[in-house]
Image: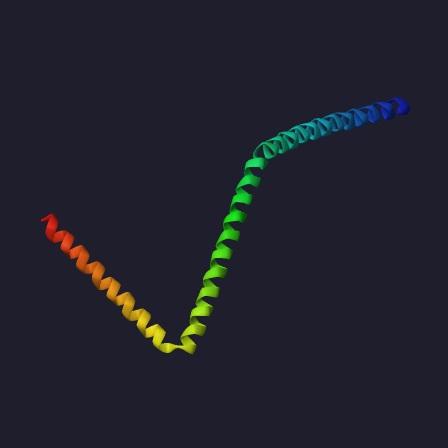
Length: 114
């Protein structure tokens, strides 16, 4: 009788463990399927994402080159200004003259339109 009870309890325990094992396997399968789908989605979008990264890298490279060129131009201009300060004054006067000419041209256009 005791052996029969022990066998019955052991059977119940093994049955519960079996059910838990089946649930774990099912959960692992679901997780594996979800991971597979996620990887497929990533693989689908990865080329376009890499293209965007390459475009941004090229844009950053071009901006850096332009900025480097501008910095070099400013450095050369500052060096020229240090050597010849009158050149700076003449450049400002020339720019002012061009602005005045542009303003006069705009005003003459307005008078013609009216």
